[in-house]
Length: 178
Image (cartoon, rainbow, N blue to C red):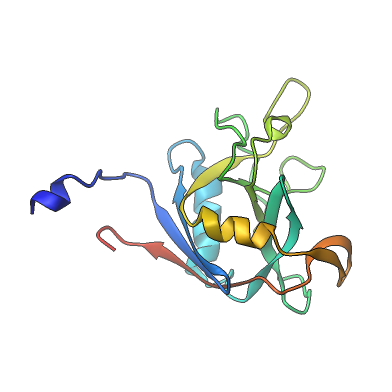
């Protein structure tokens, strides 16, 4: 009983990504990025991320996934979510942000994990930024292992695709006490 009392409680939702390179535990920022977190959790609940890949790996920058199968088929997504990059959260090492096109409000399922402090991705005057919505709380060693995989061209991409498939095998919401 005493040991449990020393474990800090968290009010934030957590998601465990099981990859073929190891687990990644994510804490979501429910209060600061509510629409983005709701969007991400809808994909988790639907099993959308299962058998998607990390298709973009740039050491010292990001690993990106959540939209393509191992055969580089783009998965059908929900409607885009409004960009919440004005939430005060910063693109720092270990944080998760939504990937998007040049349209600030185009994020759907793809996300990236920052491998470094990427302040230039933050919202700034005249720049909409990329919405931070979570952070890795366990498994940065897995993230770094993924980042170390050699990359090249594959599928529709000219560069930055891991030469070894990095697959998300599962994405589950972690219930309190797990």
